[in-house]
Image 1 (cartoon, rainbow, N blue to C red):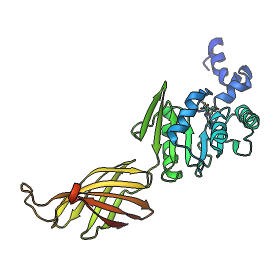
Image 2 (cartoon, rainbow, N blue to C red):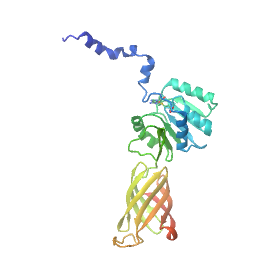
Image 3 (spheres, rainbow, N blue to C red):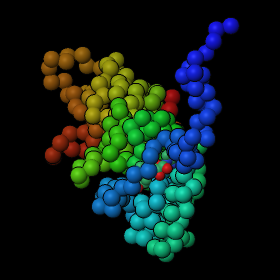
Length: 286
Ligand SMILES: C[S@@+](CC[C@H](N)C(=O)[O-])C[C@H]1O[C@@H](n2cnc3c(N)ncnc32)[C@H](O)[C@@H]1O
C-alpha cells in the first residue's frame, strides 16, 4: 500500500477539520449567496422613487439586510412590506429597526431563502444582490410576479433582459416592469379587418407578423409595459394589394391595448393629424 506523506495526509484531513477551524459565523456565511453590504440611504430613496412607489404598493426586499428599504417604504409611504434574509442576525436587526421607526405593524422580516420564499404578492421588488444571483432569480421573478410589478436592482443588471429604465445616482439603478406573456398566435378583430397575428416575445420586446388578406404585414415597435401592449402593423385598405412600389394606401396601424389573460383589448390608430382616426380592436388567443 502506498504511504501518505505528513503534508498530504494533513491536506486530506482538512475538509473534515474545517468546521472546527472556522468560526461558526464564517461557516454560516458560506450558505449566503451575497455578503451583507447596506445600501446608502440616498440610494434607498432613489430606488423607491425609480419604482414609483405609492400608497397602494406592497414592497418585498430580497436579501433585506438591516431592513432599511422596507422600513423606509413603510415610514415614508405607509405601505406594507416584507424583507427576506437568510441571516438570523440581519433579521433581528431589521425587526429592531422597524420597532425603532414605529413601523413594526407594516414592515415584516422573515428568515427565508430568496430562492424558495413566496414573493408573488409584491407590487414592487427591490434587490441588492449580484448579477449572477439576479440571473438565477430571473425565471422565478418572471413566473411568480404579476404583470406590471416593478423590480428595482441596485448596481446589478439582468444580462439580456434590458431594463425599462436605468438611473445613475453615483450607483447605477435598474428598473424592470414584469411583462404580460403574449408569445403565440392571436386572432385580431380590428373593426374593418380581421386577421391572424403571430407574436414572438423577448421579455418586454415583441416581434412578429400578421396575415392581412394575402399580404404579410410587418410588425414594428412592439413593446410591453406590464399588461400594456403596443405595436404597429403596416397594411393597406385592401390588405392584399401587391403594388408595393406605389402608394397603394398602405398605412401604419398603431395598436395600443391591455392584456387580460387570453384577450387583448384596446384602440387602433390610423393616420396622422386631420386624417387620424381610432377604432376599437380585440384579440383572442388562437
Ligand atoms: C448586499 S446585502 C443588501 C441588504 C439590503 N437589501 C440593502 O440594500 O441594504 C444582501 C443581503 O442578502 C442576504 N442574502 C444572501 N443570500 C441570501 C439568500 N439566499 N436568501 C436570503 N437572503 C440572502 C445577505 O444576508 C445580505 O443581508
